[in-house]
Length: 329
Image 1: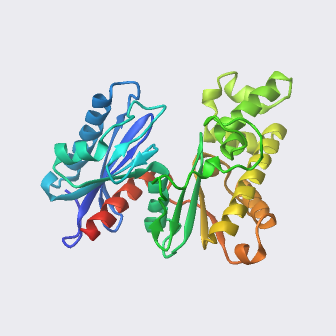
Image 2: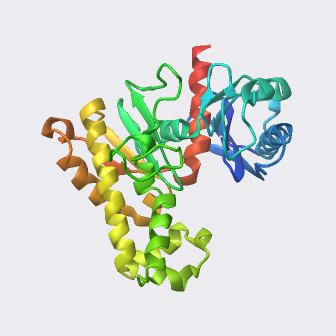
């Protein structure tokens, strides 16, 4: 049975990813009562994926011991771009949900108020409400993983912008005419500091004969380059890995410096798989290069810190999203 306090309402938080769907019943204070997990199966038809999201939600509610009609609402973090007002995904290149009416679907099937936002916005909100950013007002979140995503909170509110898709920090241009990014443009931060960018550089270096412990650890299967493999290579002081991490930290710090000058946040939260693997090593580099590339008045007193919530940032952020919308209604 659940340990929810009588005065607290519970909501569903859903983290929709390309490989898995996570759902949890969460109290307003951030207590996770129950969890459920399903494979996304991204190549399946849209209706199939929507059905899997619904099923995952129902499993989490059943595991909580709370009747579905006692759940106040559901929040979803989804890859975008999307329209959070209409609850529709505009485009998802790696997931068959382009045009998917996610919140109307969940509203109808679960008979619950449903809300949606970009997955990295939601992760940033999770850290802001329940993690590293508690008590702050102006926060930027940057998540370094396979790609690079970001979220911006100004005066306690997520910044959406005119198109509802503000916060694409991975596509800040840090080098004019630079390396080609997966988005099709050139010079994006993601083309220099994401796991995808690092793998491309590692592959080129190995092809040219550069020695690295990565070959011993993963052979020629680059899909095995997980956070733990990165960590082992760093601990072994692998020259190639250290060189590329330094480069990634430099470019991320350059981007953070620009963000400090433009937005003047009181905190920058760095999360994602690469951050979890590399910890203080990359965070120190980011701080150094952020300081070199920002005005002293913009840098002084700013906290550049690691994320705290790990994989729970998505479900907790989605729960916070639902709670915030419900509080307005």
